[in-house]
Length: 240
Image (cartoon, rainbow, N blue to C red):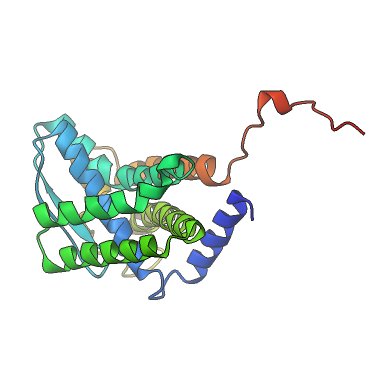
């Protein structure tokens, strides 16, 4: 099966099973990457983090320490953009000799961050379970299993960021303005987009659209875009 075909299969299966317990662990893993995105941006542009937490209902938060207004904006953008970039980085590294170490590196990162900054037992348990599963996968010593797991994690985590941006930011904000679905969005959650609106006065829906476009373009170019043919392969014919 071609790589792009594999991604299509994963995406179709993920959408079919989206609200089932099968995808639940991957959604929680996506929240991990989301909060790590905030955390890393805070380390780069701010004064680090004081802790982070994830919940079973697929929500979470990072206690970041911004230096100023600019760093606060960068940190708020780090969640959705960070989760997409983490997922795409995994898929990119899979095409290199580093693919054997991707799952192990992710397990060490999540477990280490959870032990150092995790604010709840659930956060550390999730990281420990992921690390245990990675150990089992390595014990199997099966490259195909390793590759499929990497593809599933990368694809689903990237799509989760797109889905979350589209539903919980764009559609939610549109519904608040137009009242298409009664009751939905009456209590406005303090999302990353809402925080950015308060800091920049740019509407939350605009931030959502920006994230959505960037994420879709990145996912298409990484997972579904056509590969460029080598220059030497152009016009080459097989001798009869």
